[in-house]
Image (cartoon, rainbow, N blue to C red; front, side):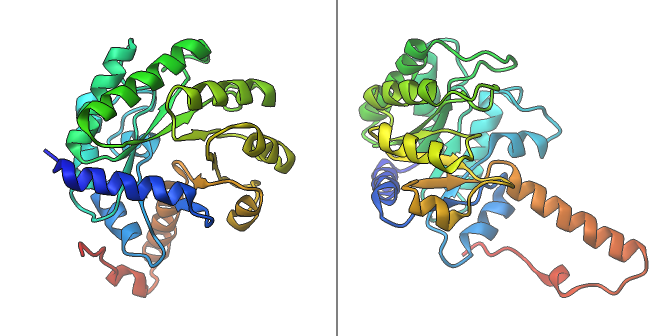
Length: 268
């Protein structure tokens, strides 16, 4: 069980980072070792989990197949291993109703998370939830966090672009609705066009978060466009596994052990 005074202080710090002129860069993690590695890098200010990567690390498909109990257990392990604010990818909230989403957020707080992603996609489907329904789920999360006395940073995600629609107006409408429902930040993954990003930043009355991937603007460019927060989803796990594959290939071909084999993540 997380100490609520510590949780509240870390939540306030995470909220402050979203208002900082410097973009908040979140290199997503999936377990204790990756969290400690990222946290030890100079310049790291917060830790963010990636649900896809966390599920993949256990041979489970994305889309809430891992289940709420297991996901929150893993979030708790990560939050307990670092001294930075942790924001958890809670997918669609692990519940059919807004009340169930609120319960998920309450349990995430107990696990040590002080921020969360909540997406408007339907798990296992290509559909988006009705915007009003998705907003009610955000509102339930906000109300539960308020009752707990922890100002959890809610990063409300709209999957308009990930579900195949190139519709900035739909993303704007959903972003505004989620901000009005209590979201502290609006996450629009899948958008990479600079002018669209600028329009979202200017049109949504909350900090805007995007997903950086190959082909997207650089972190510096995103900051110049007014983006408050950038994350990388399962990308860091992909980079780590690619490095592992290169190392395995080198060693299996008779190569000398590289210096990197001596690296160990720090628990400090």
